[in-house]
Length: 199
Image 1 (cartoon, rainbow, N blue to C red):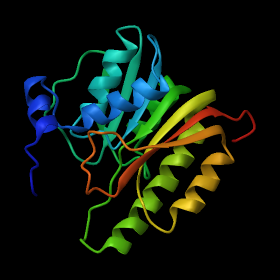
Image 2: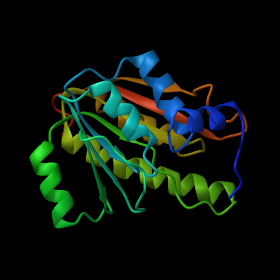
Image 3: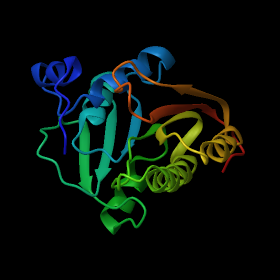
Image 4: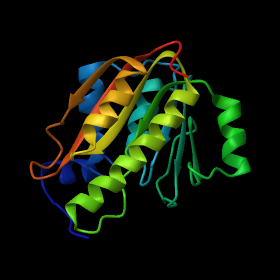
């Protein structure tokens, strides 16, 4: 896998984040004010852990982050983060118990990405499927009026996905952070204020 050793890569190393994606979430939070102390956050596709670390900083010791990914990670998390190596779409009993213990959440965030093939339309279709599954989990696990952040690979299916988000959230905003590579097809959509009847 190619490594992009740019400003954000170097900054992440200096500040002990596993990847540059930390700054994407920081930019998203700066714009949309997602996190407050004491919140509960569910992080889907959490490895290697940068988003979980940023969320943990924002919610503080009175909050908590439940992080999960198929891949394990060697990242050292603070006490307010619980990381599980789990398939969120075929959840284990341990993951189900963790959800039951901590839900409902104030924020669900998904940095899920498919294993890329290099074929744009295949990768976009796989991204769309992950986004739809993440949205289902968010709608099921969020508090009313809570928020959802999801990474999307831009493609022909995005319009349908946005329609599904808008049916469930009062406001849906698109945002591409400066820390995303210019050539990347990724963007982020933020659903604000889950509708009370969205479930």
